[in-house]
Length: 111
Image 1 (cartoon, rainbow, N blue to C red):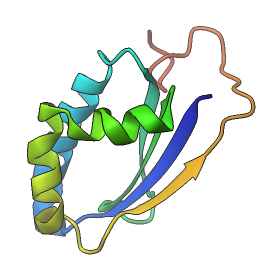
Image 2 (image 1 turned 90 degrees about the horizontal axis):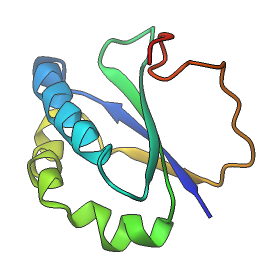
Image 3 (image 1 turned 90 degrees about the vertical axis):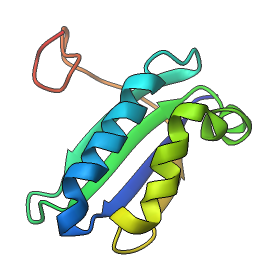
């Protein structure tokens, strides 16, 4: 059964660029994973340094035993303590229904 994670980040303002660059690399690599479904990065409109990542995977067990240990995540995990003002807030959800506008892939209407 698929599993979704919401992860909130409060980024150190001076480290915002580094945070986004590291996360972009992880997100780009995740797309090639066979158990990956989707990820959507959000920014809080009230705070340019607060982000929420929504990501769905096929298996929670796979995320814990395989995905979190992928080499492409190493620099990301090592940098978290220095780029975040506080620990991430992680919640786990089980998807029940998914609706999308036809042709909507990247959140802007592009494919």
